[in-house]
Image (cartoon, rainbow, N blue to C red; front, side, top):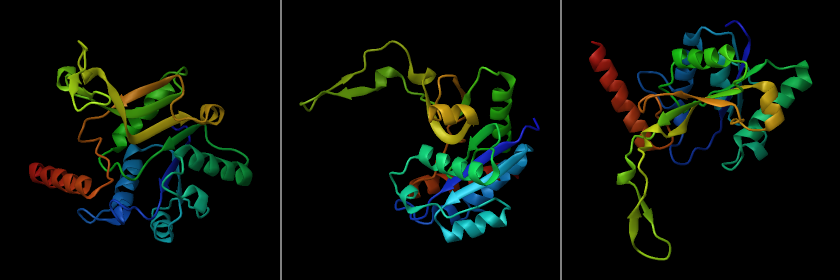
Length: 231
């Protein structure tokens, strides 16, 4: 478990749906503090590089001893800029300046505050245990019976139920908390979802993703309840 891991933390300024979301605080901690705690709690050999276009976030990242070697170019700081392109830019910079990058690449988004160090460690254990696994992606279950799902009929105002026997409880969707991939596989495939990707299933609560004021209010409610039950 001492294999070096490169964690890339993308953070873009100018969030429109929840302004300044990265620096909002709950219990005197913001999303940067929480992610830093997750990394420390994992007890892994993780090198952290933040990529951002925000001077404020650069300052906060450096306070956590994260590397912030450049200001992200404007072309990679738009709402439509792809995460893959941002990662490629970071890897290119590191290869140019250092000549190499670690074998494992870990993408951690600040908007997953209930991810834990144990979950990060679990992901790393999964990929190290099996050389055939190229990537581990955190996911959550869709716990909805198909009988309760309807499809809108084209060109009409009517709906019909999905015709399926199975429940969607066995269906998984990425939750954005963890993307772990072998660096050489990422460079070859240019995707975070190569063929040999396995899921790391997280609970609905752990999967909360902060993007709107409603998400933030839900996080506050969860944190208040956690604090109450811990007494």
